[in-house]
Image (tube, rainbow, N blue to C red; front, side, top):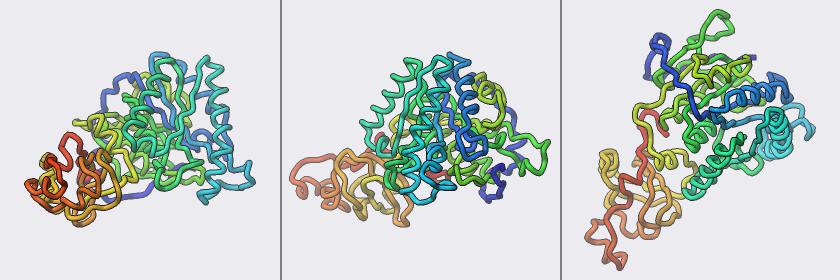
Length: 395
């Protein structure tokens, strides 16, 4: 039961061009984020497959010079039957309950697999609110560093038991991309039930080989795969989204088969398996990483076209370009900058709270002191504390 190939239309490179692209040099990575989906960990069944966990642990432990962080799906798949469900539930409360039961079973399986290889594991459960606060973001990053320095293998998952829309990262492919940025990984590896990205449905042509190299995920968007399993969330679409996100951080991605023995070892050696997606030529800086991954921002600023042009020209955002203040936020919070058509153009750290901005929006800087009763700088956001959103790619 492979993912079903579907066609998409994008104004990007043709699939044939991507297929003809030269093979990339794949340097041997030193730090890898390895994402395994539910179908990989269940071997296509409805239960966790212990042999798969053992295989992964053996591969990771085979090369002590490479640090590996695992983003593991499977909590819901491990727990739904214990609650009496015949198939993975769809209701949020039922999935939360299944994840609560399954998470302990999932970690127990990982712990046993790595214990036999002389390695310890650590559970790291994330939600988007762990990433939205700058101090907590840095704290999580430091915790990862401490674990990796001591040879511990972090096992990452979204905290499904408490996740709601406002704090959800979404899917584990994008969670893996965020994690890769958090730990400054050299490579993101997304293992699935297909051997990479193909120019057509590989089930119809057993001799078809995956595209070995793409300059960006955008080249491959016409070649997407929908999930065919209720145990998993996502598919090739979310993997390409994750690859594009990781690429913007300067991290390449490999999409490869989690079903084939030896895949992980080959990736850790830098060998050419699966589809390699190159990173962006000009990756984001660390603060921009943090801004880019946030969801559910506290507020927003609606700005006119002149302000949009200014910030895209790397100028500061000034109050006179602000048309509307949305939400409640404090000085130092990260807020969204939206144009008159409702399209997010940027996000940045504000130098005023929402009440102050409501009073000075549309005003010239010479009037601020009279309105606020104190002398303040003119900029609402400065370029060095702003993340400009790519108009084609989005976040």
